[in-house]
Length: 90
Image (cartoon, rainbow, N blue to C red; front, top):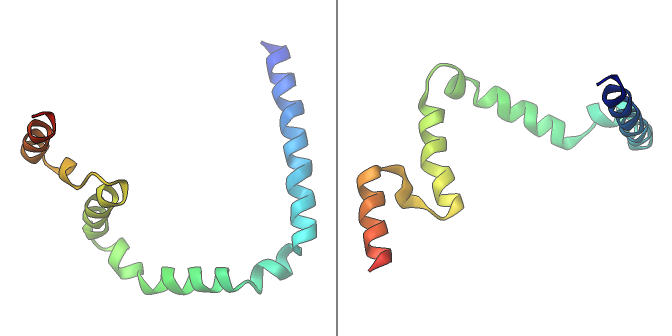
């Protein structure tokens, strides 16, 4: 068991080296704080804060959107699932 943890620690040591190299070459904090992606994410988070924090409406939106993205819009309700399954099997 101890050997397992030692091997895992060695594997993650390599991953940590790679991440540190990436962070150094990317530009560290100066590149992070000057990134347009970070600015957009912060603005979007602030703009939608009231929507996702005060209600559960965002959860309903996720449940409505994800099946469409996956291509299975009829999976949301059991009755429609049964009718679609029967139609597909016949």
